[in-house]
Length: 396
Ligand code: FEO
Image 1 (cartoon, rainbow, N blue to C red):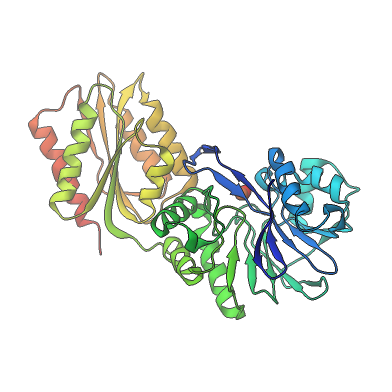
Image 2: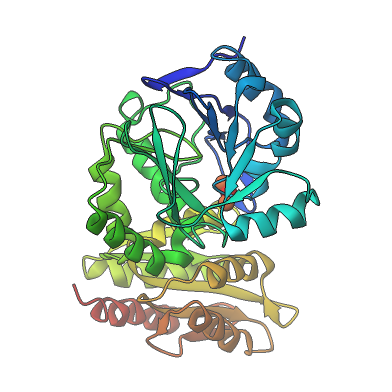
């Protein structure tokens, strides 16, 4: 029997645990995930967010351990992406809510997903407040965290901020609160989530943090739609979001490469040695062994990057092309880097690597080095020297 978990007074977690999720649109989720749904019991019981479609029965079972789902009067849709709204249609059929609170953008997106103009939408905007009995709930629109429709809900009397995707982690666990799991793992998963989901919207995170600070909101808990609820470490996760969005970078470099016959690997390792010789914390990651989402996670607090790829059919080797496309979408501005390439007969891929670096917001500190077939010592020394040159661009 799936049971609800009481978070605070009349507030219950009634979500679902996706123990075996290993891929979230290209992000490797080695710890699975959760789809958090929250139920506030009051005169007008209100449900915050649905769950992914295959988990509707699990969530309804949890709700049923607190109240009959048909007693719920309101549903809040903080975010339309299908990991939260996939089960919405089934929820609405079962609950028959009087109102569905959502942003204007969410209403538009819901209509385009479900094609149900007959649902009882009630559009809210930042600052709007509703009363459900003993509790007042206000809404804060947070466009692009993660979609244009996203918003937060704040339960004033409980001092709980329901934060949708923001502050989440893809972390399936039987525990619900931050202090009940290993702190290092929790922060790693929160950082990985930030790097792979929130990173492109860092300037919006900065604005959001400032407006939350200026609003004087008292926050005792941050309840995201994925992973653990922040209770013990609320100020820590707010500080981490400030550091990651700023971004606050370390004297750290990522050397990411792929290789066919070890030539690019030799070059990448020589460049890494150059960085290490200058006391730069250096992480070496070979694609195929390391996942693109872990590379981005390491880049979150790194100042520098080296990318290396051999040429295949006059193009970047596919796994590196995949990595660069992923990085270009997320963007990592403020970092410096250079490229390495081993080729057989066409040297054009080095330029393609440089173009991709710049498209990700990275400053290329040198045109990099391309080597025909297998590098000899003087070429590996050049890679080493480029590592040193890159270290000199890290101003920390
Ligand atoms: Fe968890 Fe943007 O969905």
